[in-house]
Image 1 (cartoon, helix red, strand yellow):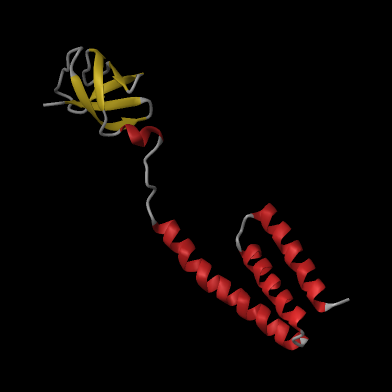
Image 2 (cartoon, helix red, strand yellow):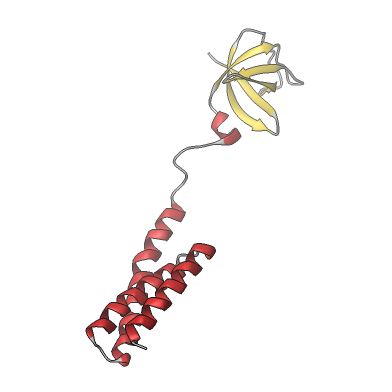
Length: 143
């Protein structure tokens, strides 16, 4: 069997394995095997084919690793979930004290407590969400 066919089969097997594992390492090896298949098609000896495979694998790792590290270190572009509610304005639907109350945040009604224990916030006031504790919004009146 021709060596370039072996490299193509190896590239296909590694590519399929990458689809199932999603590790990126097998994808890099698959691409290196594909490059090596091209060099085998030209007619390079097996020793040089292995060298090309090792060099292509190393080059793929050298390029992909810094990109992956940069993506991992970046904070998410958008906040989501309850953390996205922090800083949003809310409308007080029932009086909010240190012990409880209700506010409407973006169309949803939440249980709420005053961020400052001494405050009593009347219904109809606009407040800012300072923090979320479980399912309770800690709010402070807008000035």
